[in-house]
Image (cartoon, rainbow, N blue to C red; front, side):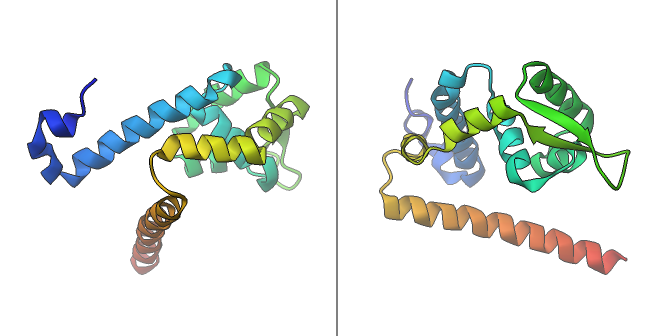
Length: 160
């Protein structure tokens, strides 16, 4: 497949198109890297990562991932049926369910998060960037996200 920015050079003027294209490229690379864990989608991995140490409810994970809560319930049902995670009642709020990886879920997380595998995965996502460029790229992403959520929090506070 040809580079869309070479096929239609005018698209270089659209930062949003380039960000969307980057999203598609990185998504495809992430999916390819996760194929060895063929039962797990990117979202499934994110759910397990969110649940790993945080003692989060299914609603909190849905909100953090920007996923509709009904969709999250279906995804959790699938992961629970496959033995990747379990839901337990919150000790202080019986209406909330906490998501916890099972032994099988912890094992796959350990495999995914193994230093050499994580480094290989990270490099495959951002090739051909150097380590310094990747670090700068991550700082840029975190700055944009941080500014957006700081701005949202400030607007919410002022509305009250």
